Length: 163
Image 1 (cartoon, rainbow, N blue to C red):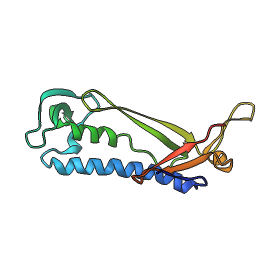
Image 2 (tube, one colour; image 1 turned 90 degrees about the vertical axis):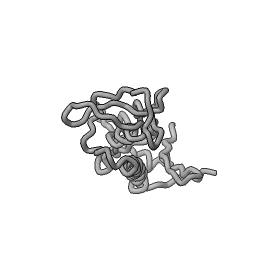
Image 3 (cartoon, rainbow, N blue to C red; image 1 turned 90 degrees about the horizontal axis):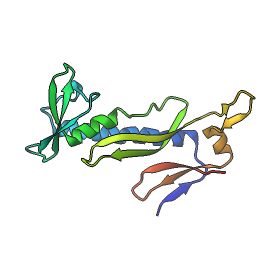
Image 4 (cartoon, rainbow, N blue to C red; image 1 turned 135 degrees about the vertical axis):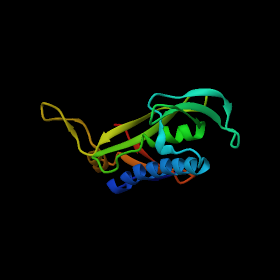
């Protein structure tokens, strides 16, 4: 059963972002090790990917055509494509923002097609009239409205209690 930390610190909240990045790094390193013949640093996925209608001969992963850094066609398996797309979404853990409620959108080919999350500033957003328009994480913490939920598998997520 999940447990709840009802009095987290900013450091504990930032650690969720760090853990998110570590998860992405692990997936990237796993894909890199699984396909030593493909140089991930040479792959450019900014132009998208096209399904090739066949699978990788040893892993059985569907193959996709992308471009390399020289703009020439290159082929990579789906799990490598997903790792590359996720690594491009790593969070800056040194800024004054908190990213939470991450949602990956997976398309019908089981390829990561989008990422969405909520971003909140640590400090309040102040309107032209000098009033707080959006409370920051620091204010929400003081009000007891920020919780960290630890799931059964050990993953942690942020929960903002609405007024």
